[in-house]
Each structure stands twice: as C-alpha cells, then as structure tokens.
Length: 186
Figure 1: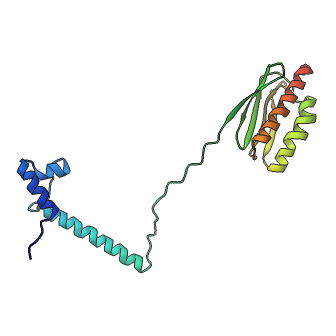
Figure 2: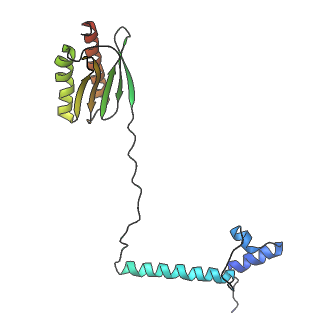
Figure 3: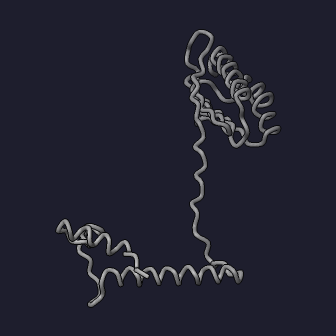
C-alpha cells in the first residue's frame, strides 16, 4: 500500500522547485520551531491538540456539561429615534416656534415672547390637549417660563406619539401661540 503525499510535502516540493522557502510562502515570514522539530511535526502536533480538545468538549456536552460562562453577545443597539423638526408659523407666515418631534416626545421652543400664564395656555393647551394625551397614553407635560414669566418651552415626554398626535399638537401649539401674540404677549 503506497502512502499518499500530504499537503505539506506537496507544497514544500512545489516551492523547492521554484527556489523559494516553504515557510516564507505559507506564513509570509521565517518560522521559529522548537529545536529539532520539522514543520510537518509541528502541524501534526497542532492537529493532535485540536482533535483532543474537540473530543473532550464533545464528551462533556454528551454528559450534559455546559460551559459556565456563555460567550458574550453584543447587545443590539436601540435604534436612534427619528427627530422631526417642525417650524410653527402663523397664518401670516411669522415664525412662532420650532418643534422637535419623535415617537415619544414633542418639544417646542417659542420664537415669540408670550407669558406662560395666558389663557391660551392655561385654559386651552394644558387642559384640552396636553393633559388628556398624557393621561391617555402616559408620559408627562411641562410649560416652562423664565424668571419674568415668558414661555421658554412646551414639552410632552415619554408618551406614544404617531403622526396624527404630532399634527394635533402642532396645530394646538400654533393656535395658542397665535392667540398669545394677539393679546400682546402679556
């Protein structure tokens, strides 16, 4: 029975014909093997070690042994919420404020000076729009003012907002800001 040549000896014979060093062709550099060990012996030793490790792992699995430390899996990154910037303008085209809307928040920074305690906010926007949405869908709302009482921010956070709710909020804030400007901002 004749022995078939293994890949190492075939590659070595091919590289010798061309006058190249086998180790440099295969590994791209000189290989430092332990004294007296050939490359074939190193491959055979590596093959035996890998085979034994695989056999041991297979035997342990068959006996019901599972590794105590599972391989770490990277947690999927939550998707970045899409932010929609909306210019809120009056019917005459005056910029009243800028809104940023996501699927769970609606925040408006007014561009006009109006007092936060005016009737359009306290009598309409809060009780008829912000409060019902936050009660029905969860979340919280705020009307912030500076030290002089001028409106600085209208926000609705941590709630579920679809396009219909965003449109409803935009129109309600537009109406409230327009009425606030019409009454002189004070």
